[in-house]
Length: 368
Ligand code: NAX
Image (tube, rainbow, N blue to C red):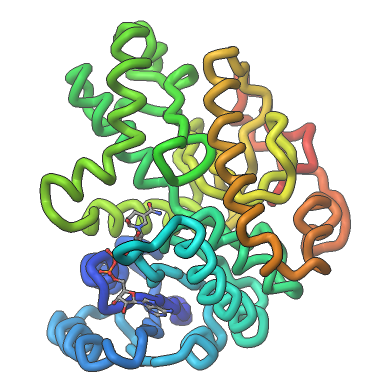
């Protein structure tokens, strides 16, 4: 049996976490042979509710659940964490402008970034879920100068799963047989769900659907799915978000399926002409606990326009909170390849996952 890993989770008494914690304790995220220590973090007024969740976890008698600790502050809660899932965030209140939302969350995520820098394990893997997720991840990362920007990611896997599920329904395919669906950009309605490289049973997905349905129905449906769920249920997505968090962390830690891409919000290294340093959703593949941006995909004018639009929204969000970002961490975000933990540019391993048995990835230093 392995040594237990420490997973710190903010917003632990909220709707997403209430679904997620039971999946983690059951071994769905880190594997069926990996014991876990859950370091659950909430705001002080939610500690009683959190105690109730801890009791329910205990009542499941999960063999992999080593210990549960409860915290009303992140400094204690992040202590020695190997993984940090930042789910809690301030939702938009009545009369609150987007600018106010960005600024109020900037305060929360600055403190969390500093706490991770000071207290977490040096190899901590961070996933930001709380919205606006991409910009919150940027803020946390910029406040953690001793950690690599590549340790900070944000969740766009829910968007990818939605894109796959909706395509499966339309074509009658099993979601398992659909691969290489990509989400580019922001976790917001400007995101671009891209099917140009997607396959169904290994054949181009675009051959199975019409361009009109893709452009006029499919893309807006994926982009607005979160809002449609709130309209229908009266509450935002929770079980599907918990599933997506599980998928994101499992793939990052244990590796992606051979030949498959998954989408993750990660710091841009300038790939595909996207501004360096912003947190942008890219197609990646993961192995040995690292991720690599899939390089060399052909980008049509149709795609380019949409990738730029969502990039622009992220630049606008960054402009709103720029004055709150520490200046001295800007360079580490823009010069990623020299910020590898080893301090050197490295040659990638070759995994024969590319076309004709050649590696797609061996000629780049973009290992993150
Ligand atoms: P809930 O309101 O049910 O739960 C949030 C919990 O976070 C609350 O219990 C609250 O007390 C706690 N919290 C707030 N600030 C905190 C802080 N500073 N430290 C610790 N805990 C804190 O929201 P839920 O439905 O669980 O959603 C959580 C966040 O995920 C929201 O920001 C939501 O917008 C975002 N989402 C992001 C998604 C993504 O794909 N990136 C999809 C799902 C979801 O909409």
